[in-house]
Structure formats: C-alpha cells, structure tokens
Length: 263
Ligand SMILES: [Zn+2]
Image (cartoon, rainbow, N blue to C red; front, side):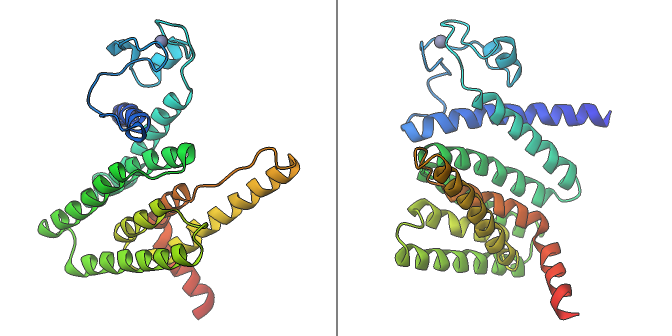
C-alpha cells in the first residue's frame, strides 16, 4: 500500500516536472506558460494528452514527435524523472510530520530545478521566476507564523539569513564583477530567507566548495581539449543545490564541526 502511495506521489511529481519543462522552455522566450497549449517545437503540431504523459509518452514515441518524426530532447523526461524523485524524497522525509517544512522545501526544490536548468542552458536566472519564488517564501513564512508553526525567532533568523547573504553577494559583485551574475545576487537573499541563521553558515562552504570543485574540473577539461571546449560554469545551480543540502544537513554539519574543535 505504501508503495502505491509512493508511486502516486512520483506520478504527481513527474507531472509537475512536465509543467517545469514548459516553464524552462517558455519563460526565457518571454512566452506565456498557460497559453497556447503545448506544441511540438519543430512542426508546431498541437500535442494531444496522450503525447504529454510524463516519461511514458517519451518512451512510447521513442523520443520522436508523433507528427513530424523529429527527435525530442531527452532533457524533458529527465526533468520529469528528477522532479518525481525529488517529490518522493521530500514526501518520505517530511510528510506528514512537518507540513510547514514539507510544502516549503518541496516548492523551493521545484523553483530550484527550473532555475538550475535555465542557468545551465542560458546563464540567466529570470526575474519572472525569482520574483514568484521570493513572494512564495515570504507568504509561506507569514502563513507559518500565523499557524504558529514558526515563531518570531524563526522569522528573525530568516531575516538575518537574507540580509547577510545579500550584503555578502553585493560586496563580491562590486569587487569581482566577472565572478558573479546579477541573477546570483538576486537569488542570494531568497536562499538566506529559506535557510535562515545558522544554516547559512554551512551553506557558504557547500555552495562555494561545490562550485570550486566543478570549476576546476571544467578548467582541466578545457586544458586537455586545448581550450576547444570553453565552459563557463554558472553559479546558480550550486547556490540552489547547496541550499537544499544545507537545509537537510546544515545543523548536523554545524554540530559535527563544533564537536571536532570544541571538545
Ligand atoms: Zn513535430
């Protein structure tokens, strides 16, 4: 029975992933995400409901458009799968014990998936996604406060997190203009608000650590290929992945670190 529930949760998550695909494709192009209905990007044929079943349709159609036969990017089913897995993981870890965190972490992850893919493809973090994300975070925190799931101390810690990250990113942005994008600066207070103090502390190490490791790997690749594949590594995905890891493991990391040095 539990596995049936998990399967349903996965299917719901994969459908949300299908919506994220629409967001990822249309938002950077300045198109509406509700209208017109989904079409093949090659031939423009309107897609039927059975062409849009997450993952399943891609497999049945063997990755090709039913109407024009051109291939469909495997990124679509991959994003649907990742979103489904993310939904199941958060469900297992936080439902039903912590509804407050369950909703906030789940939705934060959906925003994170859309932003990360767009940042990797186009090196931008669109305002049209950052703004709803910020509004969701603030509205949800106020709702959690009203429901007495969170206290004013939690709210104060969120505010500290947002201010510290924003100030830090503004300083870097003005000191090293090439190092940081405008979108990264705008994303920073949202992450600070999501994590709050003290989880922002391990976040610095995780986000910048991951970014540095991958940056070096890409530098080596470009060295081996004699600069033929020049890669710019966007920082947004590391900020977002770092936020999710810090949300779950930030406090254990802090405790581990303190035990290492104080006892
Ligand atoms: Zn087509």
